[in-house]
Length: 638
Image (cartoon, rainbow, N blue to C red):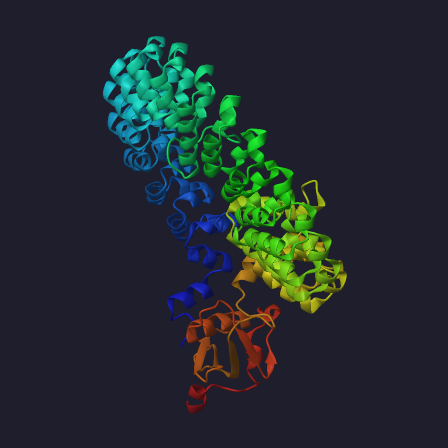
């Protein structure tokens, strides 16, 4: 196997790590890879084309200006995501074919096309079919084209607001609009807000459109019933007489249940229940209350006080939403069965339990397991939310099983663990593994939010740093443990002992895990060429202790035609002779060995003359492996 003979090997040997990484990018999770490359690579046509294909066009925004004017590249970008037309050069925005492709996949890309093309009927019709709101960006004369306006309101009823004024008085168009979206009634001529047929169609489509109807219809039972069936929150808008109508309130409650299950009109009012708008007499109706809490336990807040002491109602409420425990009568916060049901539904319901149940091992363990099973989302992230352990009794914060379960779901829960467990190597590594994986899995925007937290750009200590910050001082000063920790979460470099931030081996390991970790290294190392992310990622030599295959480097000799021949063997006993140019390095040997033996990973341990080769030896010339005067077999035979 000769270095450079294989496509993958040639890529690794010919291109710097940043280039290889961008070309290997196969998913949108790494769409910012192009943004992080040097400017000269952002002008490399092959790299940009591959990045654009791999990222649904998003990478176009980080290409060099001249490539934003490259017709083939821009066409590839807009086929996947028409919105990327915004990033293209001005001249391209006047290209009929490219614009047509863009508006087919993203109608509102019409906003970014050249003014002359906003008057081209074919382009506008394609945009409108994709998204009726594209009507906003069409030329004025086409906003008066009946066919175009009808297409727009069929797709998006509220696109009516961008149509020529005459169409807001057109009854047929108005009917089409409210059938698509009842809120289009807001943009109708006043006469239509008093047109019973139009109003009925509007509230069937969107119950909350009741806000825009003539006052007389808010007292029309048929219209009110249709409105609350579509959106239970429309109960807020009806005449007071209907807020005490049992049938209407029940229909509203049932509609909210559909919203909770993802059916019906999208929820436009947050943080409340339809029951809150009902008359007091209805809030004390047991059947209505039971129906409401089954759909969303938080409705317990709005039932009559007497019903908050009804065990069946409270049980159904916490089953639907554990946090409903907050609004239950005091005796139920001491009811073990009800509290267990609450934490199974929502782990943070533990905070509303009576103190004796916060010290109940089964209850707390159920809560932390539920929290861990919830997965990572930054809006309720392992950095920002309160820890479930915070609500547990002090004694249980020293329970190893509970703490392990907690940090596996939320690494920062280590903050709440007992001091002794902050010196437990396994627990600290589990916490860092959770945070490290969460950072790796996050999109680019969320990664930046996490980085801001790690840097300490928020106001509370809890949001600062990584789980390593809460580990014992002994662990933070232990180079061997820190190496293992950085393999889990590179950003933990921020929180290790200051003297270890000057250790090049540790800094390299951190950067290999998370490229952003370099900013937490000692200032003297931040400009070290060998520790820059593109160099670290291109380095295929594994660190000591890393999980990677091993290759033994045997005899090396000069070749008669020039260059160096190196014998290598895998741990499985397979041998090969690799050939390199005169200036090749240990880094080139690692890349060639991975390709030669077909290893699945991207790093390899090299052993030469019985000693391990370190990653920092990546630039060491292979010529040092050749004993003075030794020639290859081919040369000797010649």
